[in-house]
Image 1 (tube, helix red, strand yellow):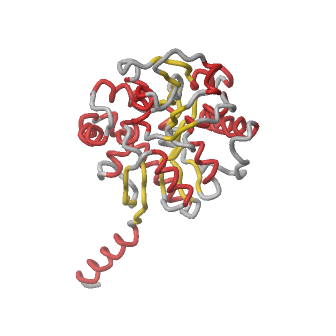
Image 2 (cartoon, one colour; image 1 turned 90 degrees about the horizontal axis):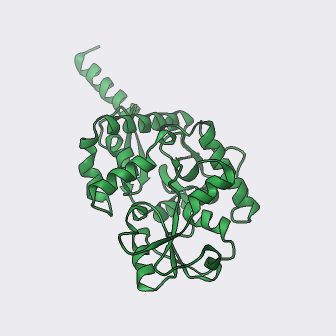
Image 3 (spheres, rainbow, N blue to C red; image 1 turned 60 degrees about the vertical axis):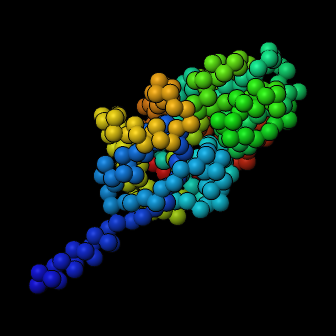
Length: 294
């Protein structure tokens, strides 16, 4: 075979092995920390390339429900609506302890008063709203906001209380807000399990072997970010809503943990329990028999 033919064959093989997938994740520090190395070619992706985009969690949820993305971060609440089209990956999820959504207010409100209050929520299909709905099923007066706008909505009086997630859980006290209830602590007390917030899902139309490659790439990306944290900081800082570096570090420390590397038996059990309780309360519909890729 001529050198020219060998060169053409090598190019053909390379093109054949490269597969492009759409990938969505949030601009929050835990997600940008997890995916920075993966989307910038710092780790082996086993021939996969990504057309990636950043979006607020509720926008990610909407796209997943539409089935318009190959791989995406999404709330577990929204997954109940998209389960027929997606499987949950073992890596990349946001689960943990002492990291659940908080209910805050400007004036003193007791938890048993929330059923009559106007509640600012970060999206109808966020897991924050799912947990809130489990514990306060009678609280039907809700208004949706971008998560970062919720503290101001409460401070201005547009809402009596707000359900806060992401960076705002680290800054609400400095803003003059007080804690009404910790839905994560309530979940842990009820179940003894970690709080399942959001996961990385892969479209069921994607070959399972490709999904497994994505899973491995996410683990490598987390490993790289942990071993070389300074390389990801510019990307994280560029997209974070909160610019304080200490808040960013605490955010990553809280939400990127052992469950991010692998759900494990406990993580899968927590997710299954969340869906079982939600179905019992009539918040979500039954899911397909198989919801995990691995």
